[in-house]
Image 1 (tube, rainbow, N blue to C red):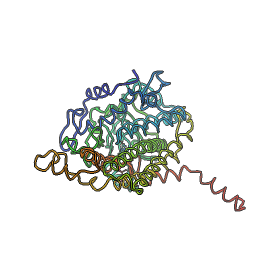
Image 2: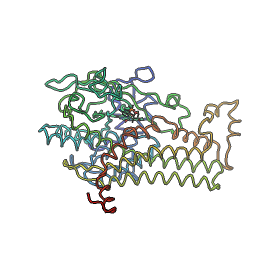
Image 3: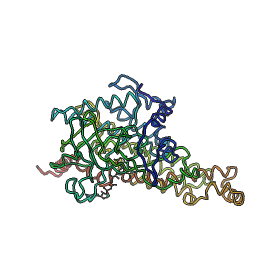
Image 4: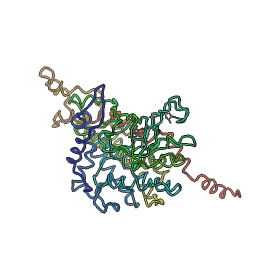
Length: 478
Ligand SMILES: Cc1cc2nc3c(=O)[nH]c(=O)nc-3n(C[C@H](O)[C@H](O)[C@H](O)COP(=O)(O)OP(=O)(O)OC[C@H]3O[C@@H](n4cnc5c(N)ncnc54)[C@H](O)[C@@H]3O)c2cc1C
């Protein structure tokens, strides 16, 4: 089939029976829960745009594996053009949903596995790449969404996996059987795990000898026995349950903690098991791909913030003051430099032994450092332009209240000729763009904390070449 419609995607999730908890209660109908549905709708947008003339060419492409049309979110890149398209699709979608669409992490896992499984097989004669290709074929043929289970809970950060008091602080293999493995552990911050059909697990850090049980990668359906999704609280999340003051009226984001309570994984779904030295390759490839995805997506989110700031200037009667225009220009250059850095990491990409293309790691990590700082600055600028009601606008329920509603409408009026409802709605969107913790904090920690980006940049940069160039100029012979 290759391409699902949005309705088919939602229907396919409805067939799944994951074990899910939220705010102290078991959720049996995930798809119709308003909090979760707003997140599912955001992933649904990745299907919806494949049906729209404006976006189709950007998101629909041909898979060399199944020789059919597929959604780009199931396609490991096999050219520089594919790497470039990753950034453009993410920017388009970031602008379309104004939050996280939640489908990039799964693609970033597929890209990683399509490189590293091949390298492990080459060294050890294992069959992980065959397992991966069979899995990828299944994902592409059914246009599935995958989730990235990377971040272990990690316990005491001063200790490695095997040195923890509780051996389950990093997900591990607790039993090897003839037909598969049994795994135990937990993965934190699992963006959109209930919007996904499949959970792909990768190790969260480099491993060393003695960590064999922790050097594991596999894929399982999101409703596998023993897998528990516990949805995290985040700011504004009660608004969707309340059905009021949501700001973004269409989309939202949620991040569960995933508990693997002795989960069975058949061997043909295992992509690494004990090859400790390859854990670092998994982490570096995944995090670089993911940091590049972020830059595309977040430049699209800044586009939303720019649109919001400009609309608020129209609604407030502040189109004339030049300092506000300057602030919008500052937002635009931040979006474009972030986008430019991600595009550059694509254009500097190269073919790996498996045939998959990999981005330039230093540029991808540089873009993520830029994002961490500049998203905060873009948010500050948007709030500055919009005004204080981003923080404490009365509820829609107060505007509808027969006793105070008419007074609020009178006093919330802005520029002449602009209906007060428009001003109220745009303020509410600005609040959501600025304050949705599940999204804004990913600017900092998503894809790894800032120090991880710096460490990667230094490790991957050819520092010797730079030293030699300056020695030559100084007349120093090495
Ligand atoms: C909104 C959001 C969405 C996310 N989505 C996903 C997802 O879909 N899938 C997924 O797998 N993960 C996801 N993540 C997880 C993300 O990758 C992690 O939050 C990130 O790697 C940091 O890990 P941590 O939260 O455990 O913080 P910590 O690792 O505890 O880091 C806290 C601080 O301590 C420092 N630190 C920690 N340990 C050490 C050490 N040993 N030495 C020196 N410094 C140290 C860090 O550099 C950082 O500054 C998401 C995170 C967020 C916030």
